[in-house]
Structures are given as C-alpha cells and as structure tokens.
Length: 597
Image (cartoon, rainbow, N blue to C red; front, side, top):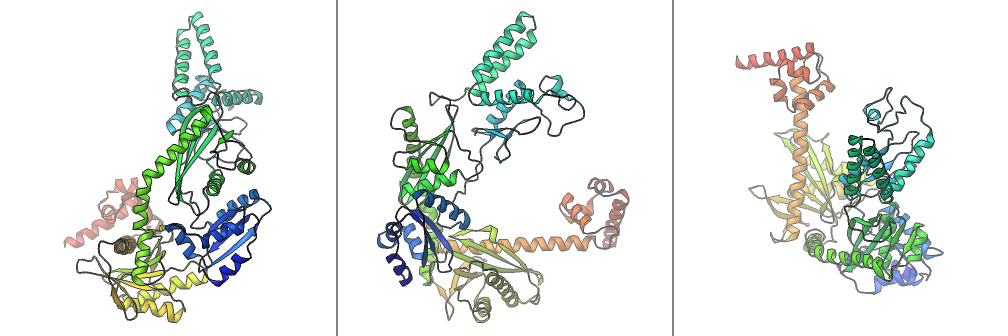
C-alpha cells in the first residue's frame, strides 16, 4: 500500500457513497458503493482476499470517493459511474441474448409485430416469449382474430387480407380510431391472460355458424379455438394468478456470483437468464448493482413485480426501480425464489471448473509470464508483425490481448509509407512510431508489454523508438521461431537473452496464441492488399472500368480468374451494360491469345 492510499484511508468518512479505484495510468478499474465508505474501502487493504480480489488490490495505486446522503443515492451514482467509465473489474453484462416480444405499434392504424428491440416509441410490448417461434405463432393467431393493418406501408388499394376479413382496409376506407382502440385493448387483455373469454366468444360463433349450416365457417372457429389452446396453454402454471413477474435467485462461491432470473408471464415460467461473474464487494451489494444494471438493458422490461431472496434490501431496490418488490416468506412464491437460487447454485458449481481452467489459461498465464520475465503482470499485451510478398506490398499488423484474451476491436493494420520495401527493421520502426505517437496524442491506454514477432534486431529498433524518441519505458519482448516456423523462444532483457518457459505451460501457450494471431492478421491483410492490386492491374486499361465497376465485378464473381473466364451474358448478369461486357470479354480474349502466341 503506497503512502497516498494510506493517507486517504485515515480520513475516509463513515457516510454512504461511492469509491473509484485507479491503476498506475490513472484509469478507473473498479467502482463500488458502500453504506460506510470507511469500513468498506479499508477492508480491501486490511483483509485477506482470494486471487481475483488480491489482483484488483495489487493494481490499485490511487482512489477517490464521493459521499452521498443515502444508500439509494449511492446505488444510483454507482450505476451511472459504471456506465460512464466501464471499469474492467465491474460486472460485465456481455450476454447479448435478447428475447422476442409482441409489439402493437403506436400508429393511427396499428399493427402487430414481433421484435427483439424495445424502444421508447409509445408502442405496447408483451413478453418476453421463450423463443421466436412462440412469439410468431401467437402473432399469427392474433392476426387471424383481429383485423389490424398488416402492410408496413399503406397501399393504394385493398389486398388479400381484406378479402380474408383480416384487415379493415384503412387504405381505402375511413375507420374510426375508436374501433382500433377497442381492438388494441382486447389484444392487450388477451396477451395478459384473458384468452378464455376469446375462446368462449369463438365457441358461441361456432355454434351460431353451425345452426345456420355454415359448416366451413364453424370449422374455422373450431380450429382457432384449438390453436389458442395449443399456443397459450403449452406450459405448466407455476402461480395461481396471471401476474407478470421476474424471480431472482443467486449463489456465491470462491469470489464468483451466479444470478438466475426466471421470467414468469401470465402465471407461467417461460424463460430464464443466467449470468456468472466475479465479485469484489459484499454479495448483497453486488446483487443490487446487478439488478439495477439488468433493467438498464433496453430488452429487459420491468414486470409488474419482482421476487428476490430474503437477504436483499427490498426497500432500496423498490425505490430504485419504482416497481413492487416482493420477498416471499412461504408458499409457492417462496418456492419459486428457492428454485431460482437452487438453479444458481447448481450452475455455479457446474461452471466453476471451466471458469478456473479459463482463468489459468488467460489471466493465470499473464501472471506466470510476468513472473518469468520479472515484470509487473502484463494484463495488456500489444504484438506486432510485418509481412510482404517478395518485397512488394509491405504491410504490418498489431493485435491486442487483454487479460490473456484477444481484444479484436483494437486490432490495427498498417501500410508502411516511409520504410524501403525490403527494410524489415525500418518497417517495424515506422509502425511502432506511428502507433505510440498516436497513443500519447489521444491518451490511449499503454500496454504492459510489447511483443515483436522477430529477434534482437527488431527488438532494438522498437526500443529506440519507445525509449529514445518517445521517452516511454515499456517492456519489449521478441518471439523467435524454429525452422518449422513455430514459436521456439521468448527473448527479453538487456542484453537480450532467452527466457526459460516450459513448452507445456500456459504462459508459453499464451505466447503461441499471440504470435499465431498477429501473423494470421498480418497475412490476411497482405492477401487483401494483393487481391486489390491484382484487380487493379487486371482491369486497368479497359475503357469504362473505374473503381466502382471493379468493386462491382469483384463482388459478383469473387476472383479475377472468374472475371477473365466470364461470358458476355455472365458479365451482363453482374450489372454491366452489354457494350461494356463485350469490351471486357474482348480484352481478356486478346490477352489469352497473346499468351498462347
């Protein structure tokens, strides 16, 4: 613990509030809330912790705190700070799973749609549904029962739906808005569990049609009743009422938390959501944060009520979400919470071994690599490689690994501009200079380790730029390959020497993945450049062929070879005029004849 943190710990207030932990670059790596800042923040530095919390504490070099007037204010502030800074140690809601909903649009002539995106457009949303099939089948049923508009754009004449009595034809008729409002209300009632009344109404219509000897119409009503039964009553009723509610349960083990959410709609359990993540605060506090962020997601609608376990502060959550929070004490409702908790406990046990193994191969590998090199744990690694085709089309590439995993959104490609075609050292120097000049100019995060796909020469030119030109002190390592082009040695130090790593270790495996990935990325970019240049050279000189035509032909045929072999008809099918197609075909025929001669 440094002197700065020690001094701040001595003056921490006992009030509620939020605290922000920072690393050596001043980046906020964790945001938390506490009922007592003094007690909570001090516990990080005075108590013993497991590996993940210990790793967080080891990275903290500074902290800030914000006092609030209540625990609720602290929770709201924490959610806002996490959204603003996206700290790497906070809960990551990375599950991009979305659930289908039925939507009644807010239009003059409304429509029924299925969607996975909930927008603030004053439309009515119902769900979620367990899958798109269930949502679509329900929507189709409603389309048959209620003659709402079907067309996305209102046509100028009636369509088939009007003749099937499934649309009122607002395209050619004036329809009173009250008619649509009543239908929307009926649909809402249907989707909220009132489909028994619809069935009774259909049964009466079926009997009336049978009495009038309209047997085809009676059969249609009968089929609709059967369809309602099939669609709406597939699942077992889990509660006696028809309320929409979400049921939460959670389990904690070895610094990890699993949260299970059961979606209960119209008294039926239709789907669940599972999240597993590391925690660094008290479980109850982490759970509150998770629930708050869960309903910030646009595809998680607030239900009528939420069930939570007994150990959670329900009043605080109710104030935050403005929805009824229930802590069941007995009966079937408590059994639901117990079931969610039991599932969370099972899930965390099942996944824990996989999580531990992943930790060993990612973060654990970073720790082992740092220990072997005698440097701070390299949680962010940036690796570089050059590539060219016999000296032509020289390119470079950079890949980024964070916490031992590739961060592809931060990969970068480079076309070398200043270095000579065969100057591999000059190319490496140019790319390193361009990368870290930009990092300093835009205040981007610096890596903990730079890896060069090469030997001592490449390492030295990179060091000259990093240290001598830019005044940075970042460890630089080289990766040497054997005669089979496989990773063989890690080079590091001054003077440069091989670092001893077991080939079966996770640290060595991490380096192999980094070297393979940066090489793959560079080669892919080189091939793209070669392909683009090949297209240019093959189609250059043909009158009427510019950049857009080249792109159009390449997109259609996929290769220059297929363009050469294409007939006039095939070229026309690619969107080329007949005259230009004949010109292209004639051009390649002439080239072929010259080669034969």
